[in-house]
Length: 198
Image (cartoon, rainbow, N blue to C red; front, side):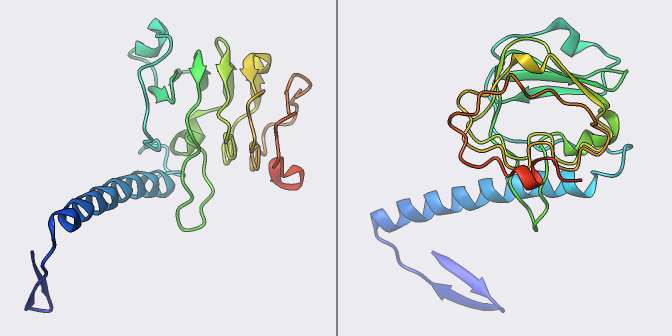
């Protein structure tokens, strides 16, 4: 393999195993760079409602498909983990049946939610069916500062959650929240001091 640095060429020799590990390493670097680019775009556009960008993380086919997710008047739609979601014209984020994905990565100390790119477009969240929260549910709604209400929160299954750190942090418009249905037996990090921090 030949590398060029500062107009100088260097030749590196790898055995068969070395080339295989190099290929795996390069693939990992490329995937990480793509994830970082997506998250940085979401962070930079977080305050710009004209350029809605959502954090792109690995997803699967939705556990259940909803016709409403395909409405042309929707602001955005996608799949988070195996839960189909969409934001309608009334600024309601609908979350469908399935298991939620892992939290968005932290980039340059920015603690963000999966939906941070749409924070200006979300005033309400509705859980449409039973949704299983990810074991790591930290920052699930962090930074959604226009969010006022969450409906059907009883449909969010938190029985497998270990981390709830900053789950509702910076949701300054969310003034009433009933968490009495939350199952927290497995939670080791609730971060109560910052879970609801504004």
